[in-house]
Length: 469
Image (cartoon, rainbow, N blue to C red; front, top):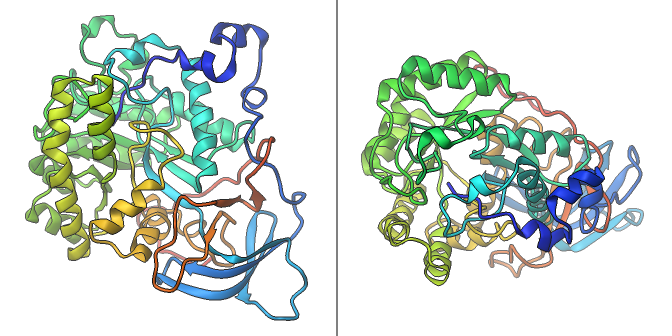
């Protein structure tokens, strides 16, 4: 989890104060026209791609020499390439093509982490969304065609950005949003350092204590149009006055949140650093655990037994240590980061070895958006084969969100979200940050324009079997 920094950067990025932007009535699409995607072909036309290789994310295999045909934003054919094939629209014979990546833990809204714990109170909702739109475009260009955006201090602002992207008004990844943090008063998901009475209501949308009050908060978020519920089960590294290892809700409270969310067709993910909070959240029925920094062997066994996904952000500890020291972040935050970083990476290694499903999740917003792919190298360094790391950002991520019938693999019937990297030498991992090429629903992402509207993606119900596309 992260805090937004003061949004004076609106002026730096757009050259105008936010108040003037509002007065002029500029739409997000106009403000962000530069550096966002352009269609490679008119809507409805087939787009053919000749790929040097395609990554099969279901099996974790590389398939050499493939022809991909897209129509109306969906893949209609994937087959071996032939010498007599007509010239493709995109000649990617020197590239490895993968499904578009998911980052399963982002915070697009507002500015990135700073030393000021009260920074979220110093921006407006409009400024937060404008910055979020810029962050969304950078994330998409980096290869992330979908994100799970797991909370914002100002409630439901992420819903507005998600919907603007869906309508094609703003370029960005397909967003699955939490709307706010369900958190205890003064807990890891609240703006701390100022009396609670002074916080505007929009900053307390998910703040509650007690089973019935928490159920009511879940209902409010569900009515606000969220895609999932994010509960802060333990203290946080980046929130002053909380401890990552300490539980902030009882198991009964967590169970009430999960039960109410299920009534609204929503899964719950739990921010949980501490071992006891992780285990309580798993027993309560959450779908995934964020961070899992201090997970123990019992917690790993529980996660595997219950099919709970772990979203472990193993890169950003280094960023926090370096930039936090340089920029004067509090000694308390730097101490908590040191206490959790190495332990989390050891837990990650154990989770991979034990066969627990780990998804790609960075906590982007703590560090600059658009550099998300840096985490692939950390996942490989700490125990994954590169093929497993890609599966964590594609097939497994889609399964967590219950959208694997639409996304997460390159198969006929799926939405045509693709990322292409230079072909690596045999046996070497790809360079995940080098010359990335991106296609989102059959539209190539490059140049000064805005994407078309995105298709609605249906989430599979928990009890519904997976059917082929």
